[in-house]
Image 1 (spheres, rainbow, N blue to C red):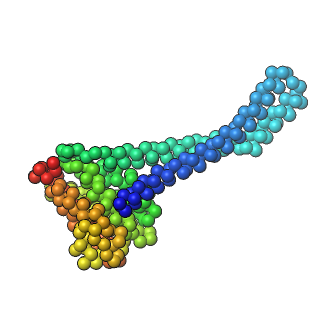
Image 2 (image 1 turned 180 degrees about the vertical axis):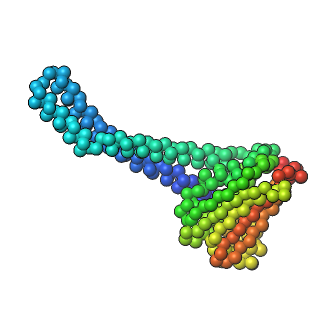
Image 3 (image 1 turned 120 degrees about the vertical axis):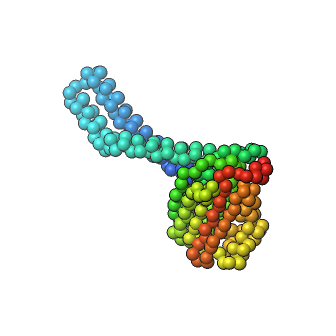
Length: 267
């Protein structure tokens, strides 16, 4: 439940961040609309004076008032800023759309049969959901190699990666770093997730996949998440290896066969 609450809080932040600057941009655009309307009304008055054939002095006065108003409100600057505000807001909407699509892929009911999927796509979908949470704590470095698609349950593997990456983010110290790399090696896909966070002792490493295990320095890694992840990877014919050193960080390596020999494990 704690992991679910943390995930929900992360989703709220991921969506609220672009929503916040979209809302701010709309507020500025509303002010700009008032300014543009004021200039438009002045030009409308000038047009009326011309239509009514007002005297030269009156036309000259109105024209100067319009020019001074446009200069005072910096109309060219407003029009340029409007373009930037709209562009930034469109990026925010696209960001929210990507988050919702990734969330939909992550939460849709798993299929009973395995399907062909790209592990890089699974990882990217997860990062779409939690990248802001990582950026608040440190830097994310990706090095995703070219991978073949494999038979798997994408939602289950997504759960594995979100557990490991979230744990890595929680273990980061100030200005920390998470490195994610993928490679195809000797008939296997190798996913390495490395952090330079608090690390774990040898004793903690030996129990890290035990259900509900927690201990000094590993409070951020407690619960069923890693235990479930271990079972999922095993059911895919793969394995998870972990190296860690207190104060220096941890490295999780997930290996998955490109060809599943025992397909009954995936059904």
